[in-house]
Amino acid sequence: MKSIIYTLLLFIAAIPAATAQTRDCVNTPIRENFNVLHYDLDISFDTLNNTLSGIVKIKADLVKDPAVPFQIDLQEPLVINKVVYGNLELELKKEKDKYFVQVPDLVEGETFVLAVHYSGVPKAAANAPWDGGMVRTKDKRGKVWWAAACQGAGASVWFPCKDINADEPEMGVDLHYTVPSGLTAIGNGRFASVTNAAGNQNTWHWKVISPINIYNITFYIGNYLRIQDVFNGINGKMDLDYFVMNENYQVAKEHLKAVPPMLTVFEDWMGAYPFHNDGFKIVEAPYLGMEHQSAIAYGNNYQMGYLGKDRSKTGVGMLFDFILVHETGHEWFGNGISILDPAYFWINEGFTSYTEIMYIESVFGKEKAIDYLIGTRSLIKNKAPMQGALGQCQNTNTDCYPKAANLVHMVRKLMKDDEAFKGMIRKMNNDFARKVITGPEMESFIAKETALDLQKVFEQYLRHKELPTLRVKRSKKGFSYKWEKCVPGFNMPVLAVINGEEKWLYPTTKEQSHLQAEVASFAVQKEFYCALTLE
Image 1: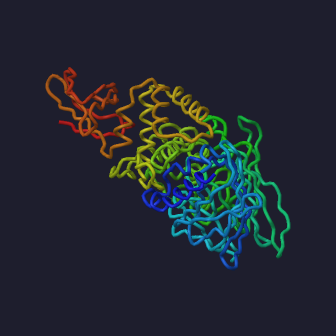
Image 2 (image 1 turned 120 degrees about the horizontal axis):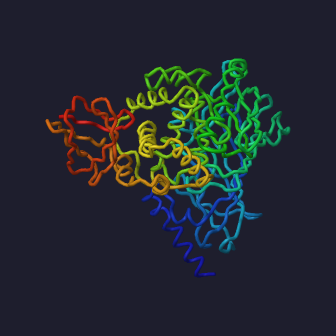
Image 3 (image 1 turned 90 degrees about the vertical axis):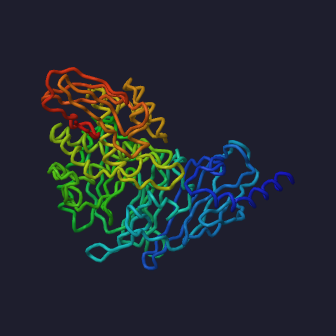
């Protein structure tokens, strides 16, 4: 016992130096030593003083070493007041936004529960959902309207947790939110109960049984009205709930009739809605939107486009509600399939951006879908690789949306079989359902399912910022061609349009020749996102 205690003291003494050298989002050995199973949030919201207080119960397994302390993340100015294990209050050691407690007498594989008591004024979001935190505002009638958005900031901006993508609570969460009477508190999952609480308050209980991204756990507090609908999907009938501001009830009721047919389109492309047991909600939010699992934040003002504008500048973007479609698409990519590290953000946002293409193609036709996809290329900057550095808390490269979607579409073109592509997307969502994956895992899956050599394609488009250039030199006998400004060995096939006719070419970084009597015109087929130098 003495040797264990001595080792522990040395370990704790080393914590400040170790954590100072690592980012908050690094999956350190301390974090890996525990596996979180379930969170139970019991939080009171003081809307007069802008504070919150509560108890978060963290149920976890000890993976290996009982001498390693448990790390709890909570961002200032919130503070942890105490941590209780059974009837024992544990000693706290604090280092910036990290707290460490030693749980006594654990053995490898043992399950335990910590009750974390905390309080304070949480950080306000400067520009939700991008610069996250708490959003505290009032609706048009002057009533309280609060919400949270924390994908970049981290869930620890408003409650104590193990704040890392790698560890989703596989047994879900229970959410108990106490708010003043007259307000509705909404969380992820299904409604369980509402009960009276002291001080003219009510406690709302919501229950999630599926694994959930830590940053997706959320709340909405406001003067909400409920609209109900039903979706008959692959897994049977599912209730749909839309919580909207009182003054928007009528327009929302009409506008959100688009939800069931949208879900039908998505199930056709991607397979069953991943969270049937947790239901589906659209919740009006005081910010643009966020893919909160089973409780999607919506702030697009019940209009078409992106805040009434067409991001593609083709006219197609005004045919649908961007936020409704995009954030719902995240239920499959981002929530159903989760990423281990923000470096692989291209999976979340690239495939979800492609759900916009799926929707447009199914409802308005393939030609309009392609027009929209190509139109979004104007948003691509090509100033940094889409795959970011590991261990960072955010990946702010917006190319992860349109450029990654164009990459997905090029894979579809290279497959030369649209039904096979849809089958791959459905298999992807089945094989990776409710799992946390890496970029290499996704790349390997696509390469295997397509039976294509895509290694250099992924290397170029994900880990290099430059577009590859197809250099074509015409002559009286035909033309020569090769890839330039690309990674060594780049070998992506490309569909060319020669004298108005499509022809597959298989360029490499070595020059090849194609004999043809006359080359009056040459172009790369528009669905391929690359550069062309024509001489």
